[in-house]
Length: 190
Image (tube, rainbow, N blue to C red; front, side, top):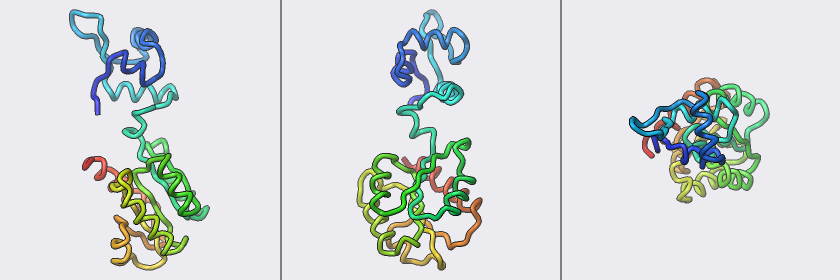
């Protein structure tokens, strides 16, 4: 993860000309510093991210660093609403929903979630297959998997490859905090 970018690197990320980045810098909209004794500009990562968010620009390759992506599989409407309430985009979360195991596989490949929450109500066999397929995939081996169960989560959940389990009904804020903690652990390990 880069800490400081040149105007050329920022231009590539933003898909604009380097001169445009220089104008943003010179006008004070994009903050950074100049290299002493030269006209070269440098933009710290945090300043670049703040600028991109402030102006609603796509984050491109930086999106994975900025957003914590959560895929919710098989959840009903009220559960989806509760998760959206506690894992807001304003707090750097992106949430996507899949209705079935097949759809979950497709979404996981395109969305690249940090965490997948699977409601076991879709069926223990299907939920287990989703978890095992994800853990076998090199791209998703480190993805955090959380099971939502109607009974106390037991050893079976962990044998299937889940990192954690929650018994329904549960406190949405508590689940959100657990998701945040598990994603932070995952990103620190990566």
